[in-house]
Image 1 (tube, rainbow over the protein chains, first blue to last red):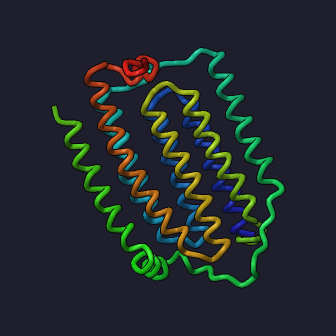
Image 2 (cartoon, rainbow over the protein chains, first blue to last red):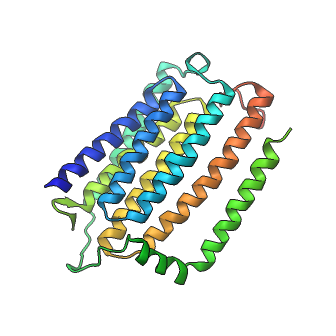
Length: 162
Length: 105
């Protein structure tokens, strides 16, 4: 009962703040609403017993990426006056086509059926279990992602110097 | 089908579709390139949420490892994207994507 209520609460918060994010004019408010969405998604991860991913999500997204966005917005001095607006016709057509897209996805997944065995391991999201999978089966992709992050760092330094 | 008490995988599918669709609408609705970046992040997160839900449903940890890799790639993508955006702003004095059509033809 408590987890059910938590699921609906977190979903409501995530979707509402996502809608606020795309509808508010001020870019700084947009970012703050997106942080609320990310915290709600982290709550979903904890609810699904994926504790490691929940912590990583909070650290990486709310702690690093969103701070980066905020810094860039403040450096570029973007505010409500500098915000470009689309015409009403474009806004209505974007919303309608997005709504049709969601409707098609929901309708196509309505009739999907999956059979599921009853007994399953629910402790997979713990650091202990996930570390074994990561460092046994996926050691090479893990090392390659470190090279990816290094090249991204070098690229950012190279791009942003005068 | 229940992965939490009274919550099936379909609930997670619906939530993920709604978040993804809001991201798609945001990309079409806004003209500020920064907000479009944020909408892309939102779409990546919707997919991650769905993958964690399916991982819990099957009791398999591999999907969660892939979510971890998606987070790493998203971080790299944001860093490069924001650096490009800073360069564009330095040259054009705007982040409006409708003005950035120099490479269009």
